[in-house]
Length: 327
Ligand SMILES: NC(=O)c1ccc[n+]([C@@H]2O[C@H](COP(=O)([O-])OP(=O)(O)OC[C@H]3O[C@@H](n4cnc5c(N)ncnc54)[C@H](OP(=O)(O)O)[C@@H]3O)[C@@H](O)[C@H]2O)c1
Image 1 (cartoon, rainbow, N blue to C red):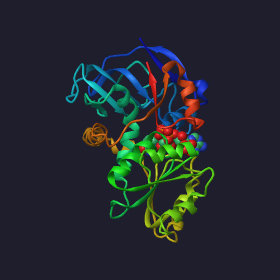
Image 2 (cartoon, rainbow, N blue to C red; image 1 turned 30 degrees about the vertical axis):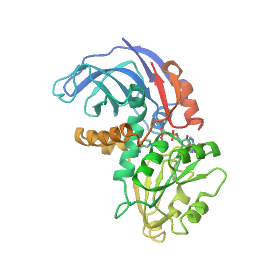
Image 3 (tube, rainbow, N blue to C red; image 1 turned 135 degrees about the horizontal axis):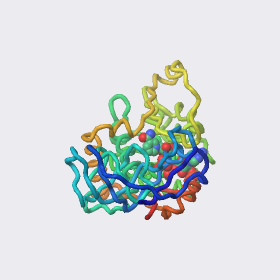
Image 4 (cartoon, rainbow, N blue to C red; image 1 turned 45 degrees about the vertical axis):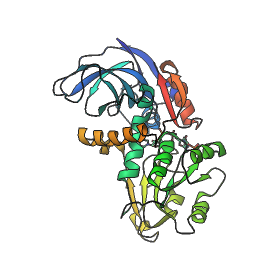
């Protein structure tokens, strides 16, 4: 038996229940992992609340680290006793121990702690595919301006540091002056408090009226319209979340007059669909972290039994950087 967090229906944090469940043996292509630490992500909130509808009962959580306890047939990249970490479908990381597909589970380098591994996999792989694979026509080069919303959050603080290492001028938005200062300290070239300042006017001012090459937008409804107007001609609107709600449907015709801009909606799970792409992206993330280019900030920690409070604080915008769930 193992402790696991489930919900039986979509709803508020009060739906999160810590229960005892049995853990089976891994089948072909699967592993059993005993967790050392678990990561908290905003997608967990969408899955709990019903923004993303999933079958019930639902085991929640998409990110963790631990030790491989058993390996099913056909799994060649992991063995019993390996330290490992993952960001992966299906949900179910809020537990002590689980059986899951091995494809997205990566060996964790000795230089990276279980805590860092659990905190960074989903958020770090997201920052990786955004900055390295979600690019405007012609790519990005050193000195280019990009706009990154929610820059002091989990994905945001990683992106600030990585963008700086790549030479990009990241303009970061955040909801308070303290969060803006944090984003700046982590490599944002410019910061805007989007609760007190007009971020469109500030982006125009910072870029000398030219606009940015890419907007990375995970806030959604509240930032959508102005974000499109922050783009330079042929710029890329990369939507990857909806923390404030889903943006309204959009007519393709509006993209032309805004400068023939491009629009994409990205999800990590398209990028980590194969073992090879997952490992390639993870190796890049491991290198960014072990080289010191990117530091993983674990700014909040909650025991698994307090998972409801962790959800409340994330939704109330009280957190910065990464949040760790301990066992
Ligand atoms: N598509 C993908 O592949 C993918 C993968 C990972 C994450 N994501 C998305 O990326 C975003 C960041 O994820 P994360 O786990 O690192 O979370 P996070 O950034 O640590 O937390 C979300 C942040 O969004 C901002 N926000 C703006 N309006 C909000 C609202 N109405 N309610 C709540 N928060 C609001 C808040 O920052 P301020 O107070 O500074 O506004 C909040 O701290 C999320 O939208 C997530 O869904 C997408």
